[in-house]
Length: 180
Image 1 (tube, one colour):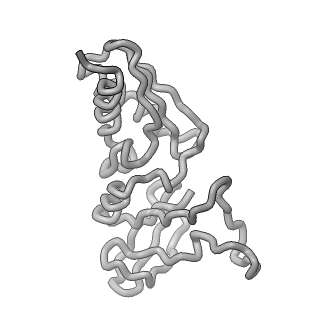
Image 2 (image 1 turned 60 degrees about the horizontal axis):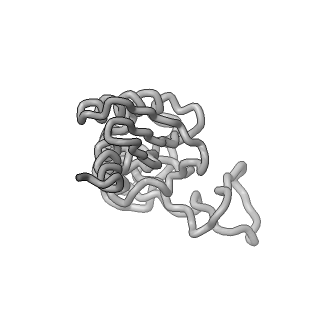
């Protein structure tokens, strides 16, 4: 007999293995958007997903892909719920996800400091000396050569969550997954 915990772990592994529709190099587990999987018996499952931002158009594709994978493994009823709290943060991306982003040529987001609560958002280029360091003050490392000598070319790239940067050492352009 399979325990509910073991069943939920297996269902989470299956749901978490679904590739992100916008960044297929990452799974939903690695992206950190899969929050929970609850089994109600052996043929009904509830999955909780948190979008990377409210209104993210990829959440529908994620839900359909999760349903498809779980149906293929014998789950009759699948309900995917969007959960907005706690909000997703780029800190939710796993270490494996960050490694895969780098290997794919995308600079992973910098981690926020050990702060709890809201994430500071910089609205202008200046700040007072008394303010805490901001993640944007840390250099973005080139995913190709690891140089910290990079420049911003555009605040937006192929998706709204990425910026376009260029390495000043190897001269290669690259996407940077912005911090949230």
